[in-house]
Length: 639
Image (tube, rainbow, N blue to C red; front, side, top):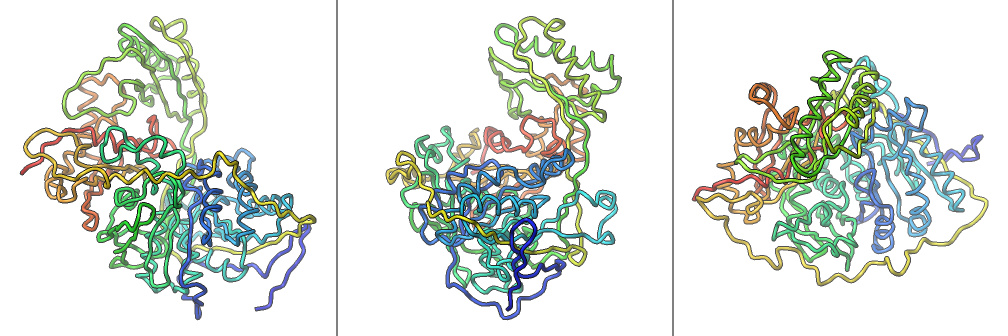
């Protein structure tokens, strides 16, 4: 292949020619197996992750070939869209911080960085990275693989009027073609499905093709396990109240980000750095397997629809787990890809105030009543748009299915409203602030704010209507910088061999029968969100308990447990509760799936997150706390 380089006015050189294709599946022509095995690491699991942890992974894993920075979610995509509307940049503003830290060592070790930090403006992100590399004295080629166009004819009616703000979940193909054509040091993408970011280098290096569905399923399993970073290696897992997860705080100080070893035949294991903290075992893998997957028998990615029902995990050591059993579902490839369309969702106004001491809850109740009444006085009809809760009492909007009492002497009233007009949100902050001189005694520490909210509307678009584009540029730095980033001695990885995975020191036994026990004595869980739906797992500590657990965890049980999430107030009247329950019966649905390979349940609850992460009035917009709220429920298991 002849490469034509063209110097641009910005001083960077075009590498090869840009290429544009639609998303219809086109088999690779004579794909080359470049390696027998590829090592793909996760350097970031979300937009707020730790760059220093990514640098440690680069330093500690000599075999690493690729480092993936997965930094784009529904919330951050909406943030980027909102930033563009305000005249800002459409890519992740932290890309400079990440690249300045990682580029010198990554280039020195020949590790290619792949990241979706390009968000809604991958080309501008490319310029930024080239500029950083030039200032560092590092010569690199930066490829971009991004959404280029969507044919209007392919849009369903609910998306057609939102064409300017639509982002597609692209698959691995654009990244594979970018690697094939330009051999870049960095690949920047727009919205690419999380698992596809990791699958792409596997397809490229191992010579896979787009009809090798069993291989694609195993590769996508690896990507799904890696995509949330340290959630696989002990982060978001430690729980002092759970004897199976009672890991010391010191063990979390030096978590290793995970990486995968993937063979050309699909054999695969996930691993963490030797001597690092955290935990990598069956339990951490099982939680991540079911995280935000919906139906585990048909987990849809742009590249392959995967059946996770028979996936199993086997620990080779405290740092390595073999993962098997992913296979293509009956329908192997989706005909349509998921579109997320940004649209304005109104104006959020919020306020907080603290009360303490005697009868503080009653005073918070009075404050809530006053603010809602004042809003009705100045903006009639708006009080129904306000949700309130008491931090320290019920801010998670969850109660036990059994009666309980809670004594508290320190609370904080929080009120959130979602209004159609900005002026109503501003007026709400004014009325809330008036509690200082017009409300009950002893209220202090008021804080308020308002902002425009952006929500994401979903739709499906046929592959033939979606176009992506790849291109690449390289810089010509005027100076050479051979200095490698190093960590201060005191922050290098400690030898934490004394920390063993929980199953190594806690014996497993069946849960008791015919007596009330908390679910956290039976199982562990993790919750995640997809739009307005929440997905939580129930993974028994003693796998055979799944048979009895299935008889208790029914759709009706789940509905009763999560119904308080939809309370508008901390002090609902009987009529409010009846209205809530009627709405739940009509709009909330529950799906419960058994996952045979890990003897677990995956529960999906539809329409329970007050509109989803980008416009919810709940303090926990993602619904992540729901996992432990479910585990706090008492159940009686049969014999």
